[in-house]
Amino acid sequence: MNLLFRLAYKGTRYGGFQVQPNAPTVCAAFQDALQAVTGTRPDVKGCSRTDAGVHALDFALSLRYDGPVPPQKLVLALNAHLPPDIRVKSARPVPEDFHARYAAHAKTYCYRIRNSAIDDPFDLDTCWRTAGRLDLAAMQAAAARFVGTRDFLALCAAGSGPAAHGDTVRTVTRCTVEQSGEVLTITVTADGYLYNMVRILAGTLVEAGRCKISPRDIDTILQSRDRRRAGPTLPARGLFLVRVDYPAEALECPARDAAESSPESS
Image: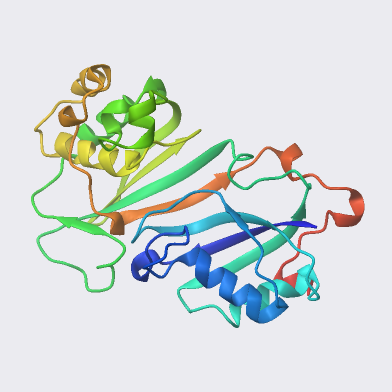
């Protein structure tokens, strides 16, 4: 059967999700746990290739599973073998042709910024700090300019695959900035992302918050298709994958397979 797993993880100790030869990764840790529980190590289809140090609140992965442990028992069994900074939240059957990456129609990321002269020891790994007051209203006005179907080449890391091949048009349906105390949260929902797009977008909004650019400059930056015109790439530690959305029909299974497997259903 084909299973969809939802994970949460703190990415600080990992070289990203994708398996790499010289760094611990989230995928390798998940496969290690699966092998310990079931004796199998199937190929895993992740919804995204999160970079080193990036976190996830709701990461999705799919895999073919024919192991001896019933799906409804896998969540707690896997968590017993995973490191404490990775947790499986749920597992459910999905159609045989479901792919966690290609079936997704939207992904939401957030970037957390602590606007303070002093670090908070409790969020050093999950927040980027900058001193000097940021203008929230200017950042919000600039964020609204990113919404729409646009060419985002200016927000793509130079030399990456999409930049080289010209596939740089994406649709952003949400881009907001909210503040709670000293922490600002930039939230972006789009149908897809270019390499480092959210981190560069966040860096560009910080430039707006510092009044180094105006909200109106966002249009000029995007039209230029020039990475040098946008803001800096902010560090990975402030970035979270918040949610991956799938069309309801992509998740529908025959009635006998439709029940979601979770700790509560075991």
